[in-house]
Length: 424
Image (cartoon, rainbow, N blue to C red; front, side, top):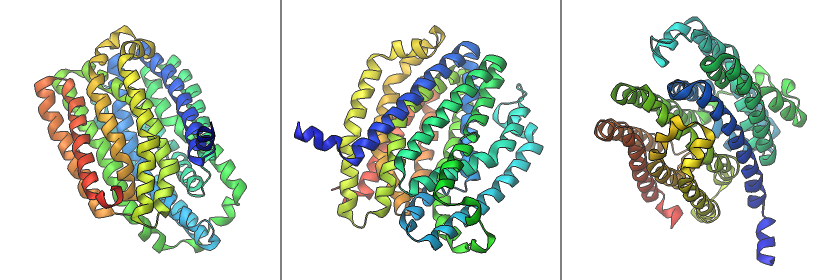
């Protein structure tokens, strides 16, 4: 009992428990939105949603200049230095506001072009890209504020804000899908995240007067230079990654059809639900810890803390998911989506490998190991692209999930070799 009590009193346990609550709520919300999409837009609509999600992911990284992880690191290191913190906040805010306004103009006035690129000539969703243009500045600044709060070590507040954002997203999604079907599903992806700005601004403004801090005289080019490495890393992973997935999905549509592409988007959507347990705890808890680790020994403790405390229960959860996959698909979607059950095995294998590699990959951001990260990430994306192209032609839609698993396995081996001194 004393051992159990000792564990439950650790900060990691408390943060993980709250994070689990947040993820469970998000999954519950996802259940509702997935069911609505299954009923009202079907597999073909799901494929279009997947295309927009990939585009939005790339756009998010560009609009935030890829600074997210860098902000966490430098705020965590300088949170006691008020002058330096003021320079970081002012410089990043002014930079993000400038780039998002430029992007918004490009999206708004070239909406037809983006519609054809993302959805094809058979769909007319120009209004979606005009909506993105209008909300993008709010969304980018909310991401910046969340990173700022995270860097200040307010882990619980970050999680509560995510919970609030998910609740807002649910309400918006229900209203939009019920009233506008596929168009509503697309617009809900765009609108919901931007609404989180108001909550994040309220809480960050309680710590310091935001408008008094933001001044052009505090703008420091050296801050941008320090963050530039993170920008390069994010542009590779968060921009090229979704674009490669967009290309792969287009190949799937051409090779096996739009409906099969919808089935792949469905398994990816399910995967995203349970992977949130890992991604959130990594970004909220482990990244700040890795950022301030001073030696290989400290880093080793952080790595193995993840492998001992997070990975085993995650694997057990995925085993349960595999054996309940028919129930999950019927619960979340409709009988029309039952072919998705054939994709679970390799998707789950790939996700275990992905989770195991992510903790190592976060060290690239924590220690700003830019060149190696870019090389490894581009290599991984190329492997995924060529494996998927070959295997889709050979095995159909099964080839995509198998390609992902193989790519994740190779990536884990490469990272294990590179970080062997910190691991062993």
